Length: 320
Image (cartoon, rainbow, N blue to C red):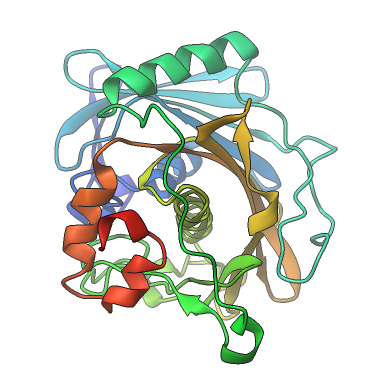
């Protein structure tokens, strides 16, 4: 699906993302855009795939994709028709100090720092861009979600909400993952059995599944930390080794590892691990940012197909 979305126009690549790649309504899932960069790169595993999302990425519209070679890395710039940059991407050989160890606690994150995508000045630039251009971020301390019950260990984890069309969790998305994530007081986690659309010719799992699962987990980590919806703005995924298609994939992240960026509660830094076949196959550091008004719109659709308590646990301020 990813390669079929591309066509050549002169020296440029034109990318038209299928509506099946939706994350938030009318927006491409961040993990699917990373997968496009990875599919076009000549870099093989182990590698780091990163993206700086300056604006939401629309679906079903022709977008210009420029690619270049920078030392041993492939770089990408995805722009809309008017020339505005949507995403800056990079695929590079994995740094020698990237994480390969197990998480620091059962089911947790424990991800060692990956090389930063952005310099300090670039981080400030994208903060300003996201704040002004992505529907505005909340200006003050966001509402806190209801804490998990004390009997979490006895009753198991709480399911996280799903939607109909999402590429990661959509119940009616024929080519999506249809993943189900859950949370308790300590972790966000889920185990996913690979589906046929994600099998590669060599019998391995398509990396799009890993980038999407990790991005989905990061979204819910940010939502649980803030009680708000939003978007992931800076994604850094390390693909350590190919995952076998026939092995379930488990993603897990410690909620205690989520931290505000520079003490700004709108920006939450997350760390996630993906395992398959007894190995850590991918890790991620992903930044979530709160978007004003997004939760109210999202909750309306989720209440139509989820138990109200399931939605309320994450977005208590919007389900009263």
